[in-house]
Amino acid sequence: MWLHLPTLLRPKKKLPIVMSPKSTSNLFIFILLLMAMSSCLEDSGRNTDGQNDFDCALFSYSDTIYYLNATQNIVINPVNAVEGTFEVSPEGLALNADTGAIDINASETGLKYKITFTPTGQTTTCEQFVTIGGVNYPDGVFILDQNQKLVEPIYNGVPGLPIPCSDDDDDDDDDDDDDDCDFDVDNPSGQLLEDLGFEIDDKGVFDLQATVENGTFGATPTNGQVLDVELFYRIRDLSASALNSIPLRFFYYETLGDVPQELLDDIEEKNDLINELRMGNSVNFRLLNTTRPTGKPRPPFVVIVARFE
Image (tube, rainbow, N blue to C red; front, side):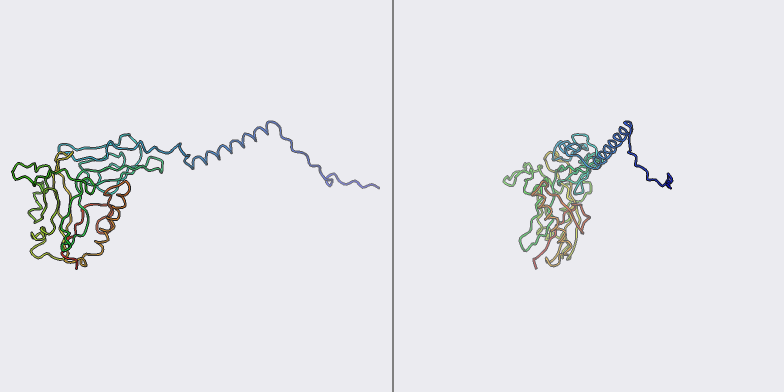
């Protein structure tokens, strides 16, 4: 007798999957779309070389040095209108962070500044250096018994650059052209450094020995005494003798050992930074640490020490 297995118990044959031409076409299109989307996502996460980089040649100013003007305020804009943010170091330059415009008369003079421009939507940065004409004085320790008695100004941020002052000490008449440079001039404050005992010549050189002997720090100077003053001057250069000024801070100590280490560290750090940047693109680029807020180059510190020890 034959037994017939139920149909449900019989093994089923696997049928081949057959796709219609239309289904195959749709799948192919879907794969292409996925590949395109993946490519777009990868491209959006990277900056293709040469395609989106900003050309830093587009960021510049018409000159590298500008001067005060006695009759009008001067505002300098970048040569090309560029979109992005502007930063400056050290502090002291009146720079518009959105447009890059510089207000010359509102800026600290006698310094060289580094302006950094970051274009909108990019990490590329571009740099330009701009100097505001005038004088600066070096931060330093001057020991009188080591014959360190004179402090000379630095003109236009370049050490050793002569100030355009006439040499008239070889004449005996009263008609010398001594108006080329005029330091410690009448000013809105009504205060002259000469009245305080400071000894300064017509080229802006301070005689520290004579300054102390003139009683600037009193008949008997006090160890650690500090004097904050402002020097007003005029130079017949491209500023056309506009009234200019610089704040100064003078210290007096009996010996080098009396000078606080914090003050010495501040001066050393600034001088190291200045020398390092002078070997590169920047001159007189100054930063401060603890004694003054970081990034502020003014006032210069002139530390007078009576004797080495």
